[in-house]
Length: 124
Image (cartoon, rainbow, N blue to C red; front, side, top):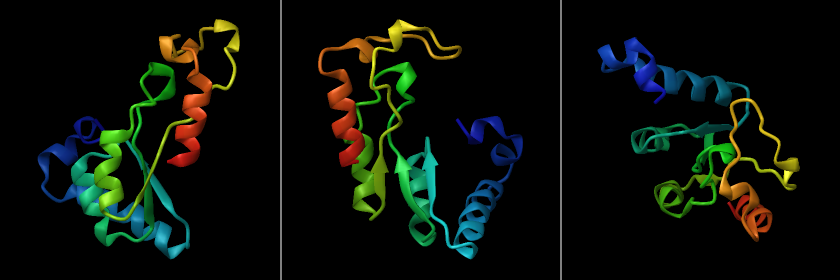
């Protein structure tokens, strides 16, 4: 999705790599780590030579549901020596309040939901 929104990334074979490298190089120069979210497999592979990129969010956004489903997307990240992470979560039912841009899903109210999300967040 990131690349589809930027015409230069679609029209050029090198612009996306320059953008990814630019983020990683700036972080390395400042001795900070970078987490990439919604990374594609090609993004993960590109990060092999970018030591500042240390982890990837491998889940969907919590508010859209199924953010617990991180097993498959974690495999490539782990295999390449980076760390997968899960998106944030709600630890209460939030009074079933609709948050603008964040519809209520079954994930938020499923039995064991908060515990499952907490364990996954801690272990990822």
